[in-house]
Image (cartoon, rainbow, N blue to C red; front, side):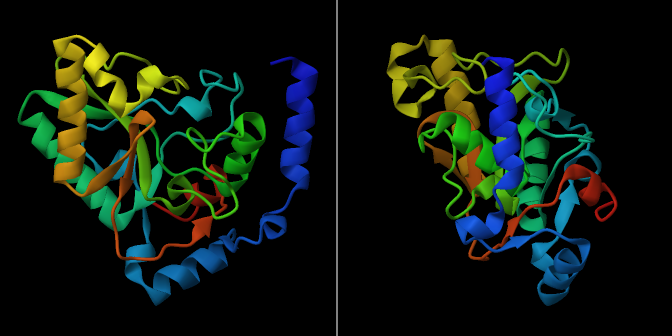
Length: 229
C-alpha cells in the first residue's frame, strides 16, 4: 500500500472514536478494575507468563502482516480472559505430551486496531466489523498454529497466517495433501476439544465458547502492561 494512502487511513483511525460506532469500550484502568471487581472472570492474563513455554510471534507488533505496518506498540506479550487462557494452558499441556506446542500470532487486539483493519479490508470473512467489536477485542479469540517442540518448526497448514484466499478456508482441505489435512485437523480437533470454535475462513482463528458476556476493550499494550502482571 502506498505510504500516503496508509497515513490517511492512520489519521482517520485516530479521528474516529468508539462512540461513533455506538460500542461501549473499556479504555481506562479504572474501567477495567471495576469490570474485574464486578466479575473476576473478566480478568485478562498475560499469556507469556501464564502458559509455560508458549511461543509468541505477534504479527501485528511487527511490519510482517497484511498492512506492512506495526499496529501494536510496546507489545512483547499478549492477553486473554482467564477462562480462555486456562483452556489454552490445557491445550499446551496436551500438545506437549505429543512433542508439540502452540505458537500464537495474535490474541487480545485493541478495538481501535480492529477499526483500522476494517477500513483497510472491509470484508467480514477476514476482518471483524467494528459495529459490535470482535472476539479479539474481548480477549476471547486467538490466532495460532502448532509447532514441533524440538525445532520450533511450524506444521504445514497449506498457507501462512493472514492469507485472505480460499486456500485458508476450512472447507478447502480436500484439495491439500494428506499431511496438510492431518495438520489442520490436529489443530481444529484439539481446539474444539478444549472449548474453542472455528472461523470458517481462517484456519488459524479460534474463539472461546463462553456463557460470559465480555465487554469490548480498547486499551493499548502500554496501558495493559501497567495493569496486568
